[in-house]
Image 1 (spheres, rainbow, N blue to C red):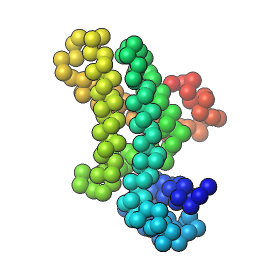
Image 2: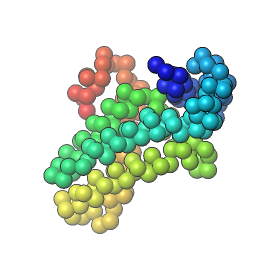
Image 3: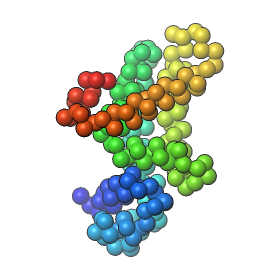
Length: 181
């Protein structure tokens, strides 16, 4: 593993465990076994590191979710199932990234962390709204409430993921989790 990936992994672990604000650049460098100039060579700043981490680890998650709803002939139930499966499996397989993203999403509206996560939040929100938009012919009674349905569904998924992550040790591997989804 190269320096850049090592720094990203260390930063993710520290940010998820302690929070972005509580972690300093020196702590990341020390834990990664590098110097601060090496970290700055790759990321320019702590915020730049956070942006790269989100793009690298969370952007790909958004791509996966977008791909899971694209087929025109899927229907609402299949889209909901497919996006739920991808969402849950990602959040369990990438527990630190998921936890960090949720903490960032719930941070102060004007904070750096909220500003960094906002584009990804908007992508995910659009994905969930699109599920219901693509299926409005199946559900004639939505009356423009696609966004509300999407937010409720997303909230249910986040509640389920939180519960799953609290009890993940009960499963020997994620294959058993997938069978429960």
